[in-house]
Image (cartoon, rainbow, N blue to C red; front, side, top):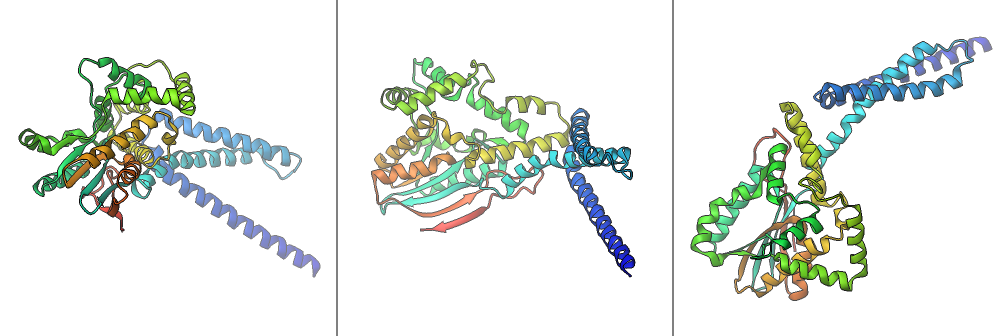
Length: 383
């Protein structure tokens, strides 16, 4: 009787082991199948590297298994190595695709929306449209439509744009090399990035309101600092803020010599994308959109860059000053989305009566080949 029960127990354990083993391989195959949707579109040499890395990982795990089971007469090293090599290859194909799926998540569900906020102090109404330098065509068309409507409603338009100083090209060079770390023209870099990522560059869509700029220049204000003002503030911080001085010194020590591409995190990426197949460019578009979305949300850690004291904080103060000193009672601002929190804080310091009356988030990007719809609000609050 005891022998029968023992046999039945072993049989039951064996059945459960076989079921779990089968479920594991089914899950692994499905995981690899999802990964193949991404990895299979890459160049053959990259696919080969992924598979080779998986086999190498499987071999390492096999070695550990072999050391533990080598004295077991029922253990088959050859079959075991084959299983580990196959499992490693399948697993690596799935793992290699995860970054792309994760970045796609950032585009669709991550905190990548830019703000469209209405502020008021009871006398002035200020609309802040957060911008992104490159984005989907529909986003920019929607913004331009809103700007034209704002002009019709009597708003003064405030634009972002650091202005050069006549006769001082050295200041532009200083800005590019010291704060940006690149000699490459900023707009040219964005245009190239937009072309390779399947997106659009924001300045391409403002031609529609240039006619009104010529007729009513007082209604179109570049509400930003110039390079001399930024250099003056930079020198002041070097003298008065030891932490800022140390941060800039460390940044300079880490920086490579400024060339046409240095400081541009997309330079190598864009070089790889050139000449890619349509499917590969679609993947590149997802990666590009995801990285941009993370940059907008601050997930890449750019907030720790000491240059932001000038590029962001000082310009927030400048924008708040423009708004506070403006005689216009209705102002529509188009500015980088990252500026909004700091700008609003600076504006409240100048006039505590300013409050957010409404705010919603608008997504400036969609995944490649999605239906072309106008951007929609993803969140909204009213205060």
